[in-house]
Length: 326
Image (cartoon, rainbow, N blue to C red; front, side, top):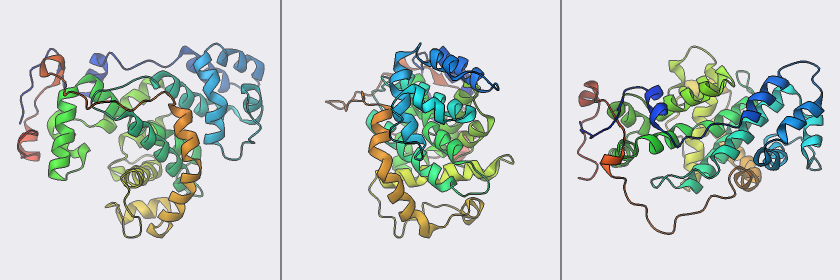
């Protein structure tokens, strides 16, 4: 069990969010539009006026709307045209996606390949929507949003506690264990739980929050299990595609119960992946066009710069691995 020097003790995702000062807050425009879109008979001009208060959101919204809703006409190139087609619930989901993209567009971590981060977010979102399509227990738009937010907890981990986060990442690579299991052993919580707490802070949807939290262990939840199963498959499949894995014989270790819950089969993977690829480039660029690849390998953060979690006794039993730099 590693011992990290620290300024602040962290034992829960809530503690982490308190010290991860670089995690941006969403625009207040998102909160106001969410409130307005939940009311009946609110004039679209009033919602449009709120959206135009934030230039970053206003600029991204039409492009992200076309990526989120394939049925939306390509001619919907302005905020006015988008709002006139979408309903209140869809506007709310679109606003969250747009607000996250606008707020997080310039966030970077020296330990994370941010281009890969956003590429995976785009893949997960598109795959989740397609997996949820015609699935009895999940909604495609909700699945898209959950897919986009599925890995945001990792960004918070690397911003708030970079040394332990990198340690967990290296140990997972060395051991072949899933990274969320290593994080649980070392930190007492994992990236999915961190992401769920962040989504809860935005007060958007308890179903999406639940899907993000249980994406790697979907049968640990008794509520909205279908959404968690959809995100589970989308997460595994997105990583496989990004890593260049052939899908013919790939199953991602996905349990039969998960396939059954979504009504999908392994045989449909290639078709789903092909359909998602058609919209991938447009969505990836709409999410974060400013993301640049680093010119040189980033240095590992110094231990003294990190806030570090409290050691958990159970980690000694769960994870018996050599130090990450061994």
